Image (cartoon, rainbow, N blue to C red; front, top):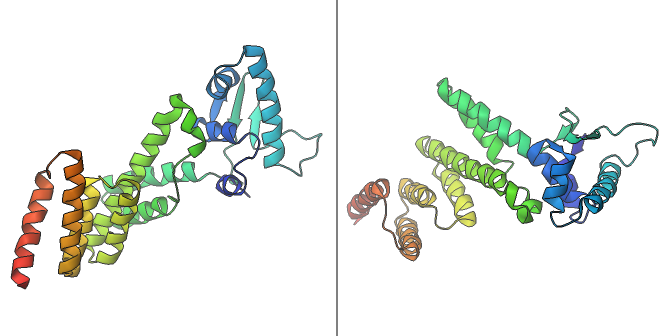
Length: 243
């Protein structure tokens, strides 16, 4: 079985890595579009030559033991298009995340809370680092990456909120910290962090979480929104009850 995430971790300088990321993001791409995305400043003839060489390197990297007389299996190529095969033998984390989040949405619509939580947990478990970092220099595909990352952040926080309702304050806190490590200004993540400390009855940690949030919002020059203000009043009442 081919695990593209493992290939990416193993070889950041692998020939065709950028082309592989484009194929993961788009699944199927016209040759001319691939050239425009990867070599926007090249003359068309030079771009086509680059694509032929890069494609050959990528196919060799993905299938090092393929006989020369057999056609490539994972990256399918025609005269006009390139596509990444959809196969049980191909593991693509990004595609799995998209599928799991769609299944979580369906489960939420059907009122299947346990299935929703399981799908969210499986999707969030695949969030190990930034999505498709090789596409950083491809401005046209940045919305694809940003969309995936926003959905993963939302899924992580939704899962944390579900866990908080289930009295799993420790897990909820970990979800909040995972998001804050990526974006220290995410107010929803700050709320989850505060609520988790509050539920755990840790007065010192609750105060620290509130102070951290106020500092972050202060740097942005904004105040807490209405939902955060409600939580802060709850925290204040709880803290006074402990005095």
